[in-house]
Image (cartoon, rainbow, N blue to C red; front, side, top):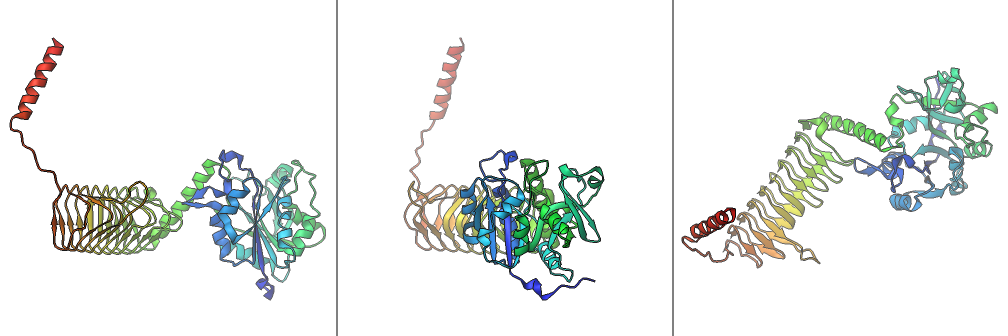
Length: 458
């Protein structure tokens, strides 16, 4: 049995290759920044990497440098590959950023976003076993191996790495494929990279050749095999992006249900990468979560809702056909009903906005009730203003509250009112034009118009 050594604690550097042009995406957005579950695929990968607490992260880019610099901020160093001569050449571009580093270097790909931290740890641990392989690669066995380079191995030890275009018929019959991911000690990796040549079908410098060079030197190389081919699936087209999204969603739905949420029609619910859903939550059909949504226990999300950047407390009810935008904060047992939009607003405990309303930049007190068609008029074309509605206040249907305005506790705003001044506690505010009544006017109008229409036909 192979045992790990204390060297497993060696510092780690991660090199993420993202220099590909991504031409099959047909997009101005860099390939690795296309989102899955509302998060760029590169940041999915970097979140997994963060669990290993690397000492250094280097992202190797080609075109689109500015986009990637903005996306990663100060979490990684950017290295540029220009011109682009293959994956080995790409990793070499990280060498100056890692000058003086003597730990392990893990090489990943920005368009392979779902490699688990556990898999990375397994690769690193294998590097530090007693037989001390020079390089550890990650292999997998896909259902269809036609597009991948092969790993020729025996009992976990690599005998040869070969690209598909350079593989013989016998080698192509091997089902163990190369994911492209590898780990090696920094001094070994960059020394091997300096010896990689480009005598192959594509005239490129292939990263897997570092394994073959190490083997030729009489040094060992090992393969770790993932049992989940989806973990190392690359994304190169819009179709593959959609497939990756679907795989991610399937797993997230299963996780939500395993954690105690009920999804009435799971395949119609779409989560964001950071959606939090509590226990005994019921989510009906066609609900979409954007980033930043937190749903507490015992919440009901009715059909056709969109929830993003919102917090929904225990016992609240949302929808159907409701939209919660960033800053929406629903307290316990509050209710947002059909065709209601809430943005940057707090609803107190038991507050209700049942129908056809817009509540933006507002504080709604506990047990307040906003009737159908209520609108908080929060924007004057230049600035946003806040509306404050007191506890137990009642806002009649089709009312417009022109911010900044305060409605007191237990106050009543009569239906159809346009309120532009504060309403005191317990006050009734009625703001309507005087009704004008003209008996018989409508009958005379209809008679005149019918006569005119008949004359035109004649």
